[in-house]
Image (cartoon, rainbow, N blue to C red):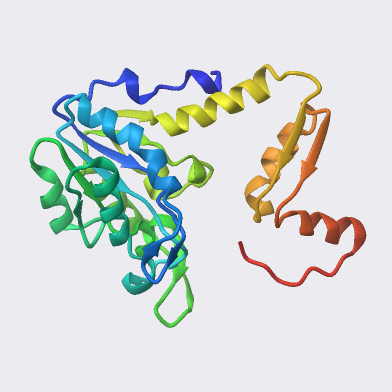
Length: 258
């Protein structure tokens, strides 16, 4: 199937339904103040569409930073995002201090019509990524039955699942692949990015120059390999360029974690 022909939010009937939406609110903060709200603004069209079409509620879930399964509300709470969302949407946003469990399920079970609910950081639970660390810093792996319970709890929070988190679409995390609902679709931000990819990968204009950046080579190596036989030239920039320079030129690059 073409990337541009995936099921999208505008093809769903959301009237009277609870929409649980995976978004990317991994925004930069300084002293609990958001320094760049672009990722939050990018989610607004999908949220507003659901509200305009009569959705009962929109439940938003995201990660922030790398707490590695350890609750760190002083450093990685999404609570400041709720205030920013309220400003951008022009309506109240209910912030919940967890993302799963009986209290969260109760709050999302029968919300007032048109409610917007923001869950706390998904990565406060090791079951989101499947691995992390304990409070002492020791590495640990999530137990399969607890991952299943985590995913089941997320699935109770909505009737329809929308994925609008393109930045984490390559990760097989619980909120990305584990929400078990009969209707799933991409949001408008995801659709826009998929349309760009479809144009570039399925019917590119020539000459085709690809410019790739970012810090994490491991996240992009498969994309790089898949594009090599499609592009005329490829430029590697950003932090991951150092990895290539180390291999090609034996350059000393030190340690960096993006």
